[in-house]
Every structure is written in C-alpha cells, then in structure tokens.
Length: 173
Ligand code: S3P
Image (cartoon, rainbow, N blue to C red):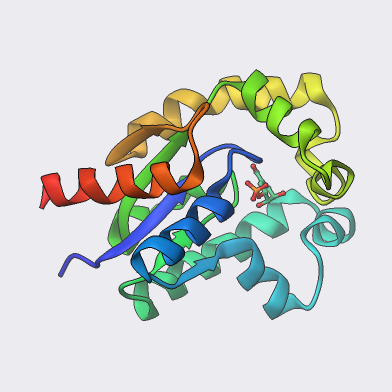
C-alpha cells in the first residue's frame, strides 16, 4: 500500500524545515525531521556525531531512521537531512518532493538570516564553501532523479511553496 507521507528532500539550507512548518500552518499536517529523530535517539547533535564517529556512522543512523519511517509513519510531512535522499526505501515511505534552488541562492539565504552563525555551525558539510559547492553539484541530478515532484523554491515564500506542493499533489492523485 502506498503511504501518504510527503518527504521533503533537497540541499542543506534550502528550507525543508521551514516549508514543513508552513505546511502545518496552512494544512494542519504534522511534520517530523530526520535529523531531529537521530539527535533525539542518540542524545547527540549531528555535528558531534560526525566529529566523534564519522559520516559513515551517521549514514547508518539515517538508514535505521528510514526503515523506521517506512514501518511506522503515515500521514506526515517528513523533512530530511540533505543526504537522506540516498535511502533505498525512500519511495516506500511516501511522495518525494525535491525543493530546488541554486547553490548561490542557498548560501545567500543562510548568510542573510539572523542566526546564520548557528545555521553554519551545526552543518559539518557546509564548513568549506568550495567543498559544499562540489557536493551540491554532485547531488543536483540525483535529487531530480529520485523526486516525484520538483518545486523551484527560489524567491518564493514558504507559504506559497506549501500551497504549490499541495496543488500539485492533488493534480497527481
Ligand atoms: C547533510 C545535511 C544535514 C545533516 C547532515 C548531513 C547532508 O541536514 O543531515 O549534516 O549530507 O547534506 P540539513 O539538510 O537539514 O542541513
């Protein structure tokens, strides 16, 4: 049976969490976040998990989280970490919505936000801009390939993105 979750994927800082909150405000659909689930289960911050155990270990935690989502979660908006789209069972969890933006627009969004320092500090893979750009370039095609729906989010309000997602989903069902 296909599940009615909506999975938001996309690069770090594109706004998956804020769009999930806008969906709750507009449509009353509850959201959860894969990084939050991992942090709450391990009682550790993502950046500390990376530092202490390395990226591979973190990816394994994401895998466990993906299996749990498939088994246990319905009718929910799931915002994900930027690398979560690689999970093999993603399609079994729900409809995959890719929030698309250019790298420059993402950086601009992060640097112009009032808590930009915090946003940068918590993301180990965003510490070096050049390396982050390389990572972005290596992922853009894969995000598009795995997505059921692509939403261009550049220069749009979160509430309008939320409405666009729901309008498109209704058109698809
Ligand atoms: C990652 C993105 C982060 C977090 C981790 C790894 C990635 O989540 O899961 O630092 O590989 O892109 P956000 O996309 O919420 O920043």
